[in-house]
Every structure is written in C-alpha cells, then in structure tokens.
Length: 153
Image (tube, rainbow, N blue to C red):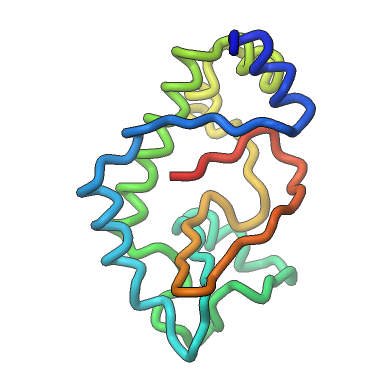
C-alpha cells in the first residue's frame, strides 16, 4: 500500500506496520534474558515499563493485573534492557519517518516522529514504553489505548 493509504488505515486504527529487522536477533535475545526473571509465581504475562515510565507512574494509583507486584524481582526494565529498547524504539521511529512521512504528518503533525521523541514531546500511554514478558499461555488482549502508533518487536 502507499504511504497515504497507510496513513488513512492508521488513522482508522486498523493497521499493522511490519518493520523486520528493527531489533536485531542478538538485541532481542538480550532483552529476553534480562527480563526473564520477571516471570514468577505462575504468571504468564508481566509488563515491565521503561525506567523513565516506571518513575513517572510511581505516583499513579492506576495498576494493571499484568504488572509486577512491588516485591517482584523486576518492577521495571533492567538498565541494559532499557538502553537496548530505547535504541530499538529510535530505529523503529526512524523507519516510520523514512518510509511513511505522510503517516507521521497525519498522526503527529510532523514528518519526523523521531524528532518528537528527541524533544521529549512524544506521548505514551500510561507505563509505556514497556516490554511485555510472556510465558506459555501468555497473551496481551486487543485493546484501545488512544495512542496513534504501537510498536511491537
């Protein structure tokens, strides 16, 4: 599809953008290793926010069932995974900027979403960016978070 039709689909909320290779296999494996300790006590899904998102959310009273308990081994991304995920997110946004500038303009009012991230002006849903850690049977059910773009790696 063309960038303009992709922008229209994204604005309707019925699109998925595939960015193969945005996270190198070694990077993804390192994130998995760093976050594996978060699954304990039979959980099949744990959501680990970035360090910055966890700090912002610490004053919030909202909590979700898939978030780690306060006494869990991990309550936010470990530093090494946080840094890797930040680099992967930057590459993903750069790919959107390069391939789909009309999407960026229609959804964010700029041709460079990565510039919004650099300026600290990119809005995220509560406790995001985050990594969802799954074990067998874990799933993150479809939902609507009122955000214009979701990046899955």
